[in-house]
Amino acid sequence: FGDGMLHGVRIRDGKAEWYRNQYINTPNVARARNLPFESTPELGRGTGNTHVLPHNGTLLALEEGHWPWKIDSNLQTLGYENYGGELTCSMTAHPKICPITGDLLAFSYFSFEPPYVHYIRVGADGKLKQLDPIDVPNMVMMHDFNVTQNNVIFMDLPVVFDLAELANGFPFKFNRDAGARLGVMPRDGRGSDTRWFEIDPCYVFHPVNAYDDGTNIVIHVSRQNEAFGSSSDDYAEVGRLYKWTIDTVTGKVSEEMVDDRPGDFGRVNDKYVGSKARFAYLMSLGGEGNSEEPVYGNSLWKYDLTTGQCWEHYLGATTRGGEPVFAPSSHNGAEDEGYVMTIVHDTATEKSRLVIIDAQNFNGPPVATIHLPQRVPYGAHGSWVPHDMIPM
Image (tube, rainbow, N blue to C red; front, side, top):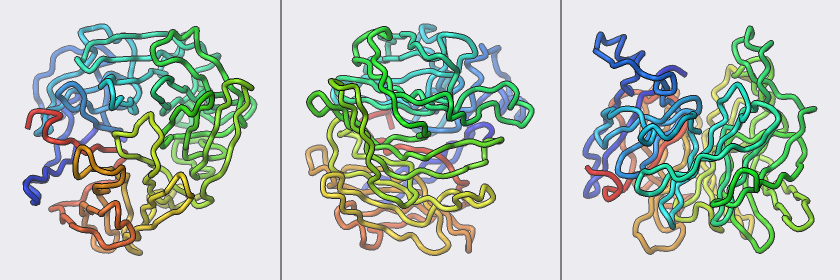
């Protein structure tokens, strides 16, 4: 993917105030621009090209092999974030922000020697509270994880580091014989408290949400039967929405397919992260079995996870979608009282636009469309950042 370029639209008083894009000022970018750049530890040389979210008054631009980059509200790079030198490993591109405590919950897997995985907990004040090793037998590609109000759930799935595959350009490969399991650890516990629950071999890039239900833990994920073949763009299959229920008493995990249509990049209202959310929003996927086709589909879906009902917002035959991000219209409104936003690209006109959908009228036309002045490349993840979360 290369070094990350951030794209942002600031909305104020019902109008788009600006669109901006800005490369993260990584060592590679500084070198290409003939700019000075101080000597940096290896973990401070990340691309920041996967996700961006707010925490402790700044934006964090993330990828999973290095430290995050701190970014201000104008998309300027402030430097890498290692929490005063306390973070001695990489950080996932998919930390979760607890809506109750403000803690940032994360993990690291990008280690070539044991312990392969660490649990990371950062307080709302930006101070590292916990860095704890998690015992897994192999270096696996653990792209994302799950949190509830009481637990974190690691996904030890069989995309395993294979040095022999490095010659093919990507050192991970799906190995069904490695098995698959879910590790449940109390959020404030220790790595040694982790309990492991076996599941059928599969892969999950992105869960949607998880919550505690008595002695059970319920997780909605976009699950696929396998992931990588010989290279990173060889998709044997793309994900579909599934529900896992972990029975922590019997040690069994039940699995249910929610929808047989390909979909991923699932999100909920951020206020419900780690709690039981009724509504989830996913992007449809296309190009299954053909790595030459963009995987982004031309619809967004809203699911009622209680009744199973699904609403579709069709973007157009030549339009490819992006991750649906929920923006609440008020602090105390109903769960789906707000807007779903996504940046889309029209392959016929080569134009990009920000589409804003009324979440309670999901089938209806967008309530607003912001036509962007240039093509926004297909990206991965993004966030809605209210003005009171970081200085504007």
